Amino acid sequence: GQNIDQPTEMTATEGAIVQINCTYQTSGFNGLFWYQQHAGEAPTFLSYNVLDGLEEKGRFSSFLSRSKGYSYLLLKELQMKDSASYLCAVRDSNYQLIWGAGTKLIIKP
Amino acid sequence: NAGVTQTPKFRVLKTGQSMTLLCAQDMNHEYMYWYRQDPGMGLRLIHYSVGEGTTAKGEVPDGYNVSRLKKQNFLLGLESAAPSQTSVYFCATRTGAQEARAQYFGPGTRLLVL
Image (tube, rainbow over all chains, first blue to last red; front, side):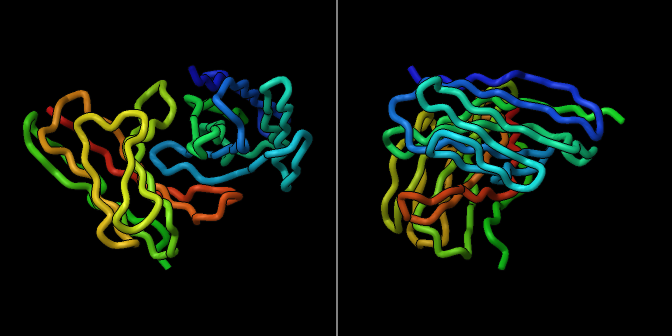
C-alpha cells in the first residue's frame, strides 16, 4: 500500500528553527510537495522536490532523499503566523498526489 | 482573477438529501480535482478530470458523481447524502504540464450530514 508518515503535532518557540519530517512508501515517485494549511483555510503550496538535495526558499527549505523515502521541511526564524498544519504529499506513478495527515505546528512566544 | 472558487461555503443536509457542489476556476487549467479532508487523515481524492468532458474515479468515489461539461467548472454531486459524507470538500486545479509544480485549492465547502 501507499503510505505517508509525518508527526501529528510539534511545538516550537518564536524565532527558533523547526524541522518537520516526512517518510513515504508509494508506488512510483514523481515529486514531493509541501503545503501549508492554516486552520479553516485551504492548503497553499510551499515547495516541490523531485531530485535529491535541499531546496531553499526564504525562511523555508525542503530536503529530499529518494533512496531513503524521506523528506523534511525546515522553517527558520519562526513567526507566530507560521502556526499551521504542514502537509507532505507525494506524486505517484499515476501522477496523483498521496497525502500525509499533516503536522500541526504550534508556535509559542 | 478569482483563482478557484467553491459554492456553497457551508451546508447542512439531512440523510438522503441530494446536493451539488460547484468548483469554478479562471486559470484555464486542464486538471481539476475533488478531495475530502477528515480529521486525522490526509486529503483523499474523490474524482478528478483531465479535461473538459472527461472524469475519472479517485481513491474514494463511492456515493459521489461528477461532471465537467465546461473547462472552467467541475461539479460534485451527492445523490443521497449519508452522515459518513460529513467532511470538508476541497476542489483543486493544475495545468496539464507533467512537471506542474502545484495544485491550487479552492477555499473549501464544509458539509454536515445529519
